[in-house]
Image (cartoon, rainbow, N blue to C red; front, side):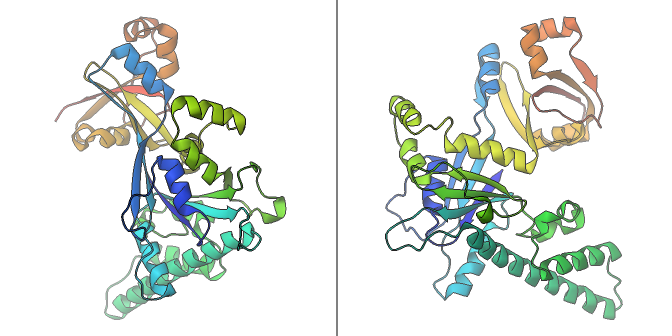
Length: 344
């Protein structure tokens, strides 16, 4: 999962990136893009690893991407460069300034959210209009376009003309015909209100955008926390009433926002967490591991994590009848431990 961090200047994007990735800027060019990969914390993986004592334990991973500031050829070129960089991200984290500071105007969170949305919408509208023009040209040349694609693009244009981001239309964002366009305003978005150190509350209702996923981060505080030892961090968490790190909270909310779950494969060689979308069929979950497993899929041997914990061992779970065989269309559940049977 790749999450792109965006926001207006002075919103604290770099601080958020460093808080989430537990990193600090080096001596390199601060204009450059930055990538940080972290493990998804999951106590179930630790417990399974203790149970199986494998040679390798592999957690799911999240990649945070902070786009560089782009070309020096003017604001328009810089903006276009940033949006090009985040098109391949799975979701966006929009950092919004909700803190005061010397030389800064009073924060206006709702306006800032709208400003970024406007840029995403304009960028998508350019893509839609160019594609519709191309399809119209093809039709004049005798090549009949897909009626479904034309209809979907026209729906996109209508929404974008009305300045509504495409993420508000789940049927559009789910359409396979449109996936290749990587529309920016269609990407799931988590809005992070970057607050002062002493403020852990969301802005008042008048400053909250309608229907958006929002949460608070005290990025400067969390950045300091990320650089501390375990003992120092424990005291720090208690002092500022932080129940979980920003990394843990943002990952959890991102998974919820994107409808993601984890399933596990276990054994003496490896215990591993795999990330898939909720309601993914077993045969498609198999492909996440390897395309050959999907190709030669026979059955999925499934044991729920909670059932394994209740039984105490895989062998005992089998005796209790909680290990079951499922077919291709089985919807994998969060926490399923799966052994895929296949033949190629």
